[in-house]
Length: 111
Image 1 (cartoon, rainbow, N blue to C red):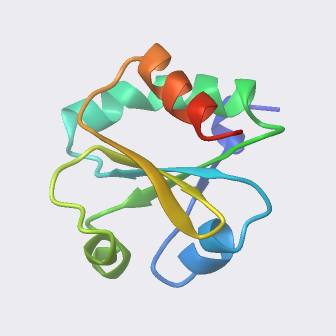
Image 2: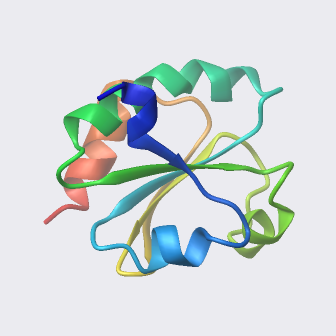
C-alpha cells in the first residue's frame, strides 16, 4: 500500500465521522499547502501512518478549505497536530516536530 494512501483527508462535512467516531485514535494534522513546515512534516506523517497503521489513523485537514473545523479546535498556527481518542483531544503539538517527537506523542496516548 502506498504511504500516501494511509493518510486520509477530512473536511468540515466528514470530520466527525472520520475522526471523532473512529474505532482507533487519530493523529490530525491541520495544515495548508503554502505552509513550509507543513510540507516538511508531510513525509514524517507518511512514515508514521505506515508504522502505526494498525493502531492509529492519520488524517490531514486543510485549514484554508475547512475553516469551521479549524476554528472549532482553536487552530491559530500551523502545523498543529492533535491526537484525538474517543472523540476527545488527548495531546497537541504546534509547529515543526521530529519523527521521534510525534512517535512519542502517539505512544504515550495509546495505553
